[in-house]
Image (cartoon, rainbow, N blue to C red; front, side):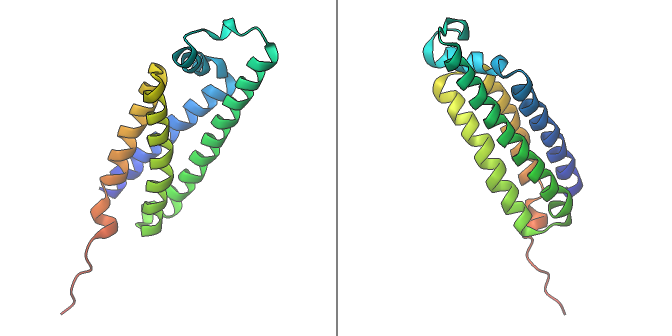
Length: 145
């Protein structure tokens, strides 16, 4: 189960990197849905170019944080999680859980459908990947004779 989980979480890593890079490279693609869900208007309705630039810059900064968090999780996955170190399971649960759950709740709250889809996929894959090997990490020690 651990190998399968590492593969699943590795796929999630690739997914999260692709999403983060998409937001960094084309920030308005995701920002448009988010902005429309909150305001009811499109980004084109923003009259002040500086305001749009500030939103775009903030969106890129959040995506960059997500990218660096994903890279950190990848190193935890490759060098500790796959060796069944308990701290790695807890680290993956905390960091991944906060990231995916917060994004999902945030997008559900405002009704941003693209974000709901992105975070729902990530959350489901994350939950499968993190809970599949739970017995490996928390098995009771065998009693010696």
